[in-house]
Structure formats: structure tokens, C-alpha cells
Length: 130
Image (cartoon, rainbow, N blue to C red; front, top):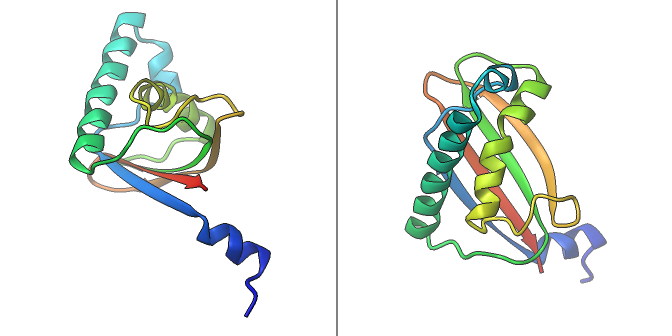
């Protein structure tokens, strides 16, 4: 039996997921911070990403990938604030080589979702097509 084009594409990929217990701050809030405080936040994200990669045996990559990001927040934000708030987090993914680069040539962010929850969390699924 022949597979459809979609089934063929779906069978030639693998995915990794990391879960970070940290808050996503709104872009409006981050804009008021000093640059050094923003850098400390990015470094916190970086340590958490590195830890998850080691614990889950996730390898570094040098190829194009897709991301799906779920942000668990106490209060929902407008889309621009969420995307702007994820800038430092996505930079940390790049610095730890969870993604090769955050330019459109190397990264396709498929979905950014906010889920209202009591505890802050960021869950990232990386999909790499072979």
C-alpha cells in the first residue's frame, strides 16, 4: 500500500521535548528592565535548557527544525507580548544548540500557545525532518 505525501512526510521526522519550570514575562514588562537584568534572565533560561538537554539525552543540532511552544501562565497575554517575552528564551535555545539558529532559514515556529495554569512552565517540542 502506498502512503500519501502527508504520511510520508510525517514518518520522516523525530521530535524532542523539554520542559522548563520558569515564567514567560510579557514584552511590556521586559521593555522596562535594565539590559543586565534581561541578560540574567536569558542566562537562567540557558542553564535550565542545558539541564533538560542533559537529563533527556537531547543532542545538539545543525539543521532546520520546527518548534511548538506551550507557555503555562497565570494570566493570558496578547500575542505580541508572548512572542516578545520569548525572545530571551529562544536566544537561550540557540546558545545551547537546541536549535541551530533563530533565523527563518533554520527555524520555523509552528505554534505558540498560552495555557492558563496555576504554575509557570514552558514546554518546547523540537521537530526535525530527516
